Amino acid sequence: MRCPPPLQIGPVQVDPPLVLAPMSGITNVPLRLLVKEHGAGLVCNEFISGYGLFHGNARTQDYLLFEDSERPVSSQIFGADPAKMAIAARQVADRGADILDLNLGCSVKKIVRSGAGACLLQTPLEVYRVVAAIIAAVAIPVTIKIRLGWSEECLTGLEVAQGCQELGVAAVAVHGRTATQAYRGVANWARIAEIKAALRIPVIGNGDVRTPQDAARLLATTGCDGVMIGRAAQGNPWIFSRTVAWWQTGVLPPEPTADERLDTALRHGELMLHYKGPRRCAEEMRKHLAWYAHGLPGAAAFREQVNAAPSWEAQVALVERFREALQRFRAGAAAPLD
Ligand SMILES: Cc1cc2nc3c(=O)[nH]c(=O)nc-3n(C[C@H](O)[C@H](O)[C@H](O)COP(=O)(O)O)c2cc1C
Image 1 (cartoon, helix red, strand yellow):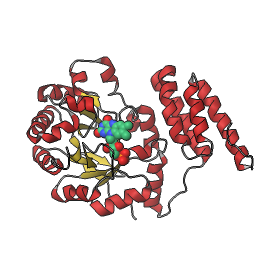
Image 2 (tube, helix red, strand yellow):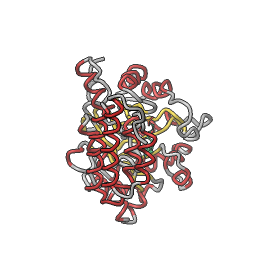
Image 3 (cartoon, helix red, strand yellow):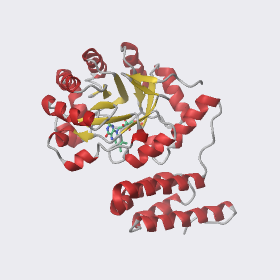
Image 4 (cartoon, helix red, strand yellow):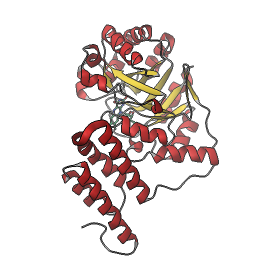
């Protein structure tokens, strides 16, 4: 499989066409920097409340922060009130984001109850009002991230994507599930292919890409212009570097070694410490350390210990202890961790 051509989103070139999916609570600056270093063409931040921005909420505005080395960066907002979303969109553009993405896929109850996220897929006309207001408010390209529809009985994804294309949306990311499906079942790539075939603008396929082979298969079977990767990037920025290397050389690099995983986990924690401070770092690194250790012998015991550790320093000591236990294990000792 040769390297697919860059993805063009308005004036923004995404090369390679591999995109880190927005994930609330996960795709903050530290993960985005690591994923970028591993060759992702585009990173997206965690989704941001358009209403929070509208009301000048300082914590919401913090989500707009990014480093220049992350560029191009897509900032995603959610909300359903066209006038407020237009003001929020202007803030996103003023903060220097390269792309503004509208969330039309979130199926979390709190968001849906507010009429935002995937709830809007039930009322395409409401989507168009919000999209038209945003497009009129900013000069940067506007994209949407959708699901196939609200439910099997309400498969409006294609209609919404076509309507938004006519309004001037620059690209569409499609998660191949419905909102009522949440994350159950399998992403339906055939339906992503139908949406791709019906649009002129670039389409980014998303859902269940777990390996470089999956990324290539999604492109081949859907005809999509790009691939978006979410959960498989958790504790695994190598999903990007291995895919890119495979495309460029035809040789699939091996999985990272245990040492590489732990080294990157430590680096992730140092970045977290820098950007989030000691308390948030220790809290947030629990899940990341578990992801980096996943599948290694003794990972369950390591996870338990990390969850009980009071600080990042204590977590670092546990990582080093885990590393030594793994070395002993490789040398023939029985239990990797007690
Ligand atoms: C923990 C978590 C948080 C997510 N947060 C967002 C979000 O803020 N905005 C969004 O559009 N999608 C969000 N998603 C959905 C992902 O972007 C993606 O569409 C979904 O996980 C399917 O892709 P995957 O199979 O590669 O994970 C989230 C997913 C997860 C697992």
